[in-house]
Length: 257
Image 1 (cartoon, one colour):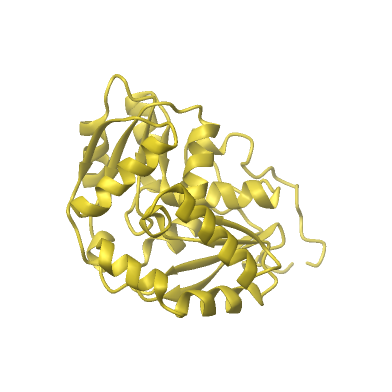
Image 2 (cartoon, rainbow, N blue to C red):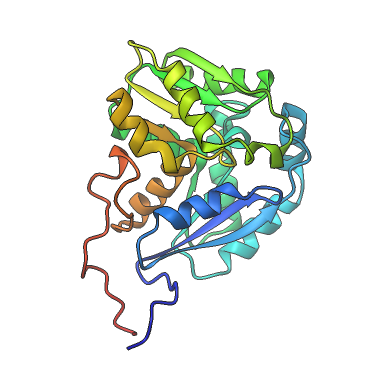
């Protein structure tokens, strides 16, 4: 008998991610059932500020990453930057999707912000509480993006971090406490933004504690990749969002093994 070697026989997810970031890949692999693989191209983020994000999005590296990643036999390409895709509102995110589609014509396309809105709709969220690690300028744009898409932000908190590597160093326990603190009676769900900010290991515990859906940018991105690929490919234990998309033993078996 051969051992499973990580082959994406259910779905191959392509991810454009920040060069200095580490969280999104590991969290996607943690949530991925056997047969779902993640393949990454990286771009440089100078600083987690409005100016730094704009510099990244205007650099030629973005197109190069999309074209290189699109040359691989992937099923879905996800742009893994939440703030970078909501920076200038919904129209900006839609325009980014169109650019990515032009640069990588083979796979289906999504972004962290597109996935977030789809995930909030899937859990039937209305008003939300918002937790981010961002500086004030980026955090306010997150609020604007959510509210222009029908999700009033009734409670929120941000940590004011402007260095990408520092985002990943926030302990999961602190993020858990942060979400518990911002939960609000009028919030129908909690959204945790930023793809280099740990979250998925605490989602099940948070949903049990507060009794409502918790959606994070990484979780939503992975979920939406599975959704648009049309596969059940999630391990159990990562939130209500994955209802119906958890892998069933025996389904999607790789006949090549």
